[in-house]
Image 1: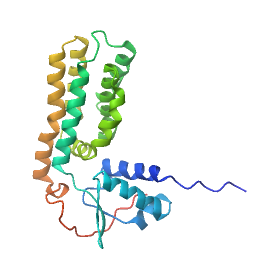
Image 2: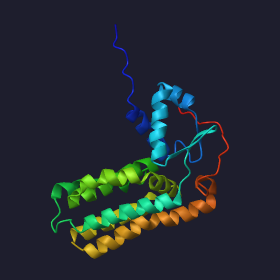
Image 3: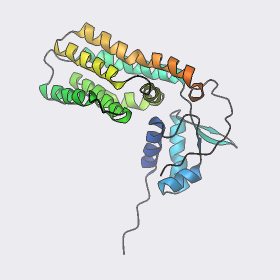
Length: 235
């Protein structure tokens, strides 16, 4: 007889749901049905409920008694807080990049930049390469272990960045990445920090543009009671 399928760990369900929230497959403000999510994932409602609780603790889901659970709208204050943390970590790490950076790490970063500059690159592929690049810079400085802390704090920031990529071509950010790495190769810390600061703060301009065009995606009153709509179920 075939072995029974293993019961999915709630962490795996949480990570699946979190990814769908961060990639905007589950849109800000969208209603979440435990029953429909469980059916789509092929699991019971219990791990889905546990995953939603974890997402609520992270501020990515809101639960309203007697109404239901909803994907949180993008909170500009949470975006600003996460950006503050990220800027503090990444700018400080640049100071510890050695005058002669490790050649193997540099080679990986250069390959990453070459792929970023592909004219056919889509938003999701660019976003993944962007994440790898910034983690690689921390590796170059000897502070890669700080990256998971940054990642865990930037859910709202990542959604804002993805939304921003809908209107800002990835090549703009790829060029900034090139400039940062060139400055580090030249051991020009002031230029590297200045370019990195401009690069990381671009999200604020994107947010203002997006709030004007799509205000429904952004939080205005965290206590407002939402109107329940049908949940989107993916195949």
